[in-house]
Image (cartoon, rainbow, N blue to C red; front, side, top):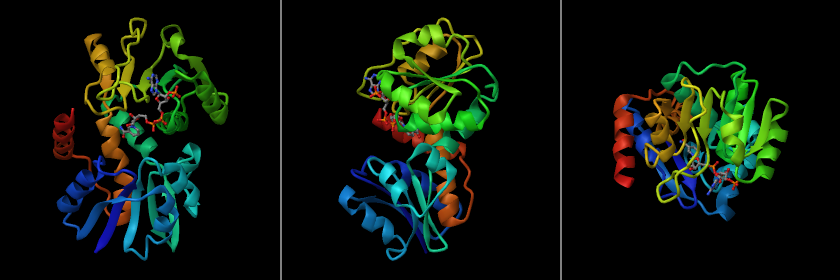
Length: 277
Ligand SMILES: NC(=O)c1ccc[n+]([C@@H]2O[C@H](COP(=O)([O-])OP(=O)(O)OC[C@H]3O[C@@H](n4cnc5c(N)ncnc54)[C@H](OP(=O)(O)O)[C@@H]3O)[C@@H](O)[C@H]2O)c1
């Protein structure tokens, strides 16, 4: 029987078992996917003894993503670009690491908003944390030539721009309205809009009517930003699809089947999120 898990500290909040449990059942795979609470001081030992413990690999969540990246023997480009790993698997006796947030976000965006253009129009990213890194990498890989980061702390945005090079520029948060009027996509990667936190209150009036607004926060499913965008008849993309799609590569590595993100799986997660919102 193949086994995988998600590790974090704490780990109770993780929805990954719901996703992987659904797929294990759907594909009739004799396997398991569990939550493992791993203290930061025990992470290295846990990763080194994955095989001994009978695991094919694991997902990695807060606060272990950077440490897991550092512990891996082989790192995919996705993990190197972000400097963090959310998926580990064993291959040829080595621990491999990937960051599947990029894949999850870009796949969902492609499904929901085919009209977004991989051209010269700018993409505006709100936030400069770990998730922003993964998403900026995705846009750059897709060929976008102008990515603009807007962050509360401009220094963090500038560091990220420096990391990614000439196609990425940092701007103060207050310049969003003036510097993103021709944006093709706007993505919120900050924690704002999450249940219990203030909504993002941005002036969207200058955006073009074909601009796509994405939010990677998924509790609630419709954040204040997405509501404002919908009220202006802009195309919106929520954060739940990213969560679902980022799980696909890990499942395939551990259990040998590329799983499908079905409407039924989405409904299962929506019910769970709505219960929490
Ligand atoms: N849908 C998915 O699958 C998925 C995947 C990954 C992450 N996420 C979500 O993405 C969000 C960010 O995750 P992360 O790992 O990137 O977090 P992070 O590394 O801690 O970054 C947090 C970002 O939010 C900004 N921020 C926090 N509070 C703010 C405030 N009051 N006003 C303005 N900006 C504020 C921070 O700005 P400063 O730099 O100024 O502090 C920073 O840019 C979380 O809500 C997480 O749940 C979703």
